[in-house]
Length: 448
Image (tube, rainbow, N blue to C red):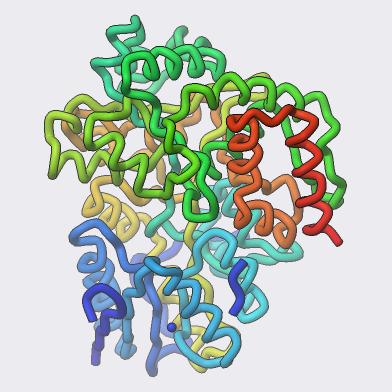
């Protein structure tokens, strides 16, 4: 009845309502039963795949549906390539996982899913703004934002180092509800001051300026630009490089990038993790993956780490995000059961169980699901990832780099790491007018 196949490390084109409360069991409809196949993201946290398989098995057994669950690695763009191949061939999984921009790349091959989202929102609250931006096309939900893999990328810093410089991260951002008076002083200007001190100490902050393999840096710099109100291209497709906000953020970046690691332009997404775990960095922007590896390989480093919100700028405090989605293919032969399966998987008991197993790594992108106890319990030290989800009292907003533009333009800005390249050119000594001129040429190519 229940089949499972693993694709990737354990075993392929387009890149670039209102409702009543859901029951905890599936309601059989005329279109249900039969067979369903679903392609999940292959979770890197031990136990992440197993708990998902267990939940799928329970639903399948209860509803007499044969479910094939495949776990597809994101390494080497294999998840993206799978989605592209299936969209082109019009055959494959009934349900497939999409990551960030792939949602818009493959939206034409997905079935609208407003009915499911209406019921989920009625119970779980509104999804984050970044999820809505990615998953809605012409005001229609084309996929369900899922918790599996969804993350923020806030600062993770060494507690002891910051204390040497008079900043008690645990006191400013404690592991319990409520704002503290000192949070307002955590600004990008303050960040630059501490980055300069770290550089003098030979630690640096683990910030990169690499290309399209350095998405952590792209996400961080997108949040930096948003905090200054700096937009490259707006929603109407108009280039906005001649604004005061652009000049202000670039003037700040001239100062900030002097404190970046010497090898920052060659960073990829593993570089900041290695810098933290090895003890060479006092701060990185990352989900708790780096901390989790440190817990295993360098426990003394892990016990000295604290995750907390990003700095604020003149226009607010923005936190980088990365989002995952489940879409039902419009060529599926069992859309009813496919929809009901993912609706079941996104109900609170299942979401919380998966979140617990992954030590809080997976963030449910719905307003009413940010009260799980797991973020208080993860250690060492206790509460180290409490501030990893977006807490309302921190007055921060989710950020997706370049999302001021329409998705078909924004994805090009993102994939070409334009923000990283702008900062790298400043670091190399180019003037602000030179950087703006270069960027203008790049952006004009995206909007032609």
